[in-house]
Image 1 (cartoon, rainbow over the protein chains, first blue to last red):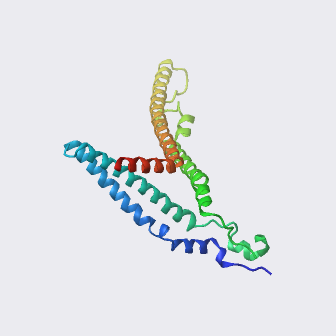
Image 2 (spheres, rainbow over the protein chains, first blue to last red; image 1 turned 120 degrees about the vertical axis):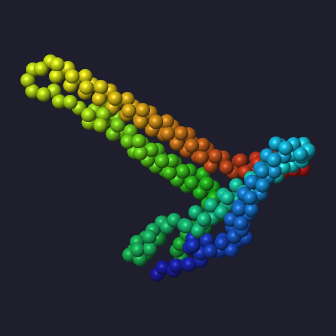
Length: 106
Length: 132
């Protein structure tokens, strides 16, 4: 007899991980940091062209740009990983194959 | 009991996804673009017919021995072939230039993807250092 544990399936794991705030809000944070990156780039360009900011302020803006860029890339990677790998698990065998020969899994 | 999906620590899942699965997909996509470009410019066909007449503009030599007619047809056909070859060579070279840029773009994306975690870490610490 074959006991099939639904809780160990990839899709069940994906559903559990979907509730994890780290994955749940990854898209939101990705978009937020992309907007912040563009804002910092715009402020940096504006500041360097008009020379209204002090050297220290420009340094802070560059730091903010790099920080928000790195965080947007980080959340981009996390959301992509979740969407393409976790949410769409690749099956070793199709359902029709398993239904024809359940012992294939053993 | 059958394990429907072997338990794997998520970090290992991410490592295999980032360094093996996605690079494979990037290379496949990149290869598709290269093949598309080759076909878009019909490079193999153009190479096969490099010295064919331009738009099939050709003159027939006619029957009998007529040196003037023969020379006329020969010169006309040679010009047509040379013109065809020039146009085809220009198209082939243009296609190869595009191919080169697609290749460079693919290599760039591939390298950026492989080093993305490192880029993220470096940007983060550099940005943090500049802020404080």
